[in-house]
Length: 279
Image 1 (cartoon, rainbow, N blue to C red):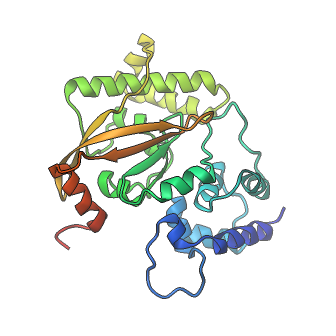
Image 2 (spheres, one colour):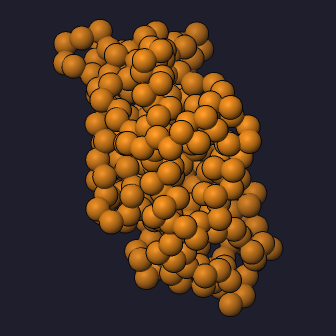
Image 3 (cartoon, rainbow, N blue to C red):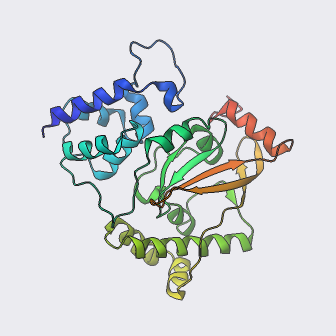
């Protein structure tokens, strides 16, 4: 397959996706109904320049992570995703690798939850996608790369977070994350990225190493969360986790009890997005 064929396929798929289908604002005059390059780049978490080079045939070897992100952003079917991997000269990930494919039906469901903070992670706790409300609540993740998008990495390596936990809650979170990674490592033994993640966490975090060596088992429970937002302050939220059968994918949705101050703050976030109230 040539780089030109890859670029042509990306342009065809981009042209058929409506911006409102994926929850993007209209944003001025549009010459075509499809996504703009900058919109595809935003949805896939890659640079506009790289999307341009791919479409123009000046970049021919995207990584598996980039291809998977493009497949999600373009709402590709299973057959189309396999074709894209082939165009990129890559082998489709096998059953012993952590799945990161989000079926189009699930994406369509998430697209309709515009007023609810929603994110999707894989079985290794890596963030695959987050809607605008989630990013308004938890912070912009579009620039995060590699392990920066992994929840366990953030917790054990001390990445900045808006989530606030009691001492007991923090301990439960840590145990749950180690347990989930242990289960993922057992289920997906051929996943080299997962093995590397665990090795780096063991080397870089004394706390992770202690829990890993202790052999803790269990599951990650996220019934509630307190978030300290820089603009609207503290929000007390319920967190519901839905699992997609057979894939290990988790859909995280946050909501507030109706009539509470937190519910009003969520409504405000749906208006201001990631803007500052001082702007």
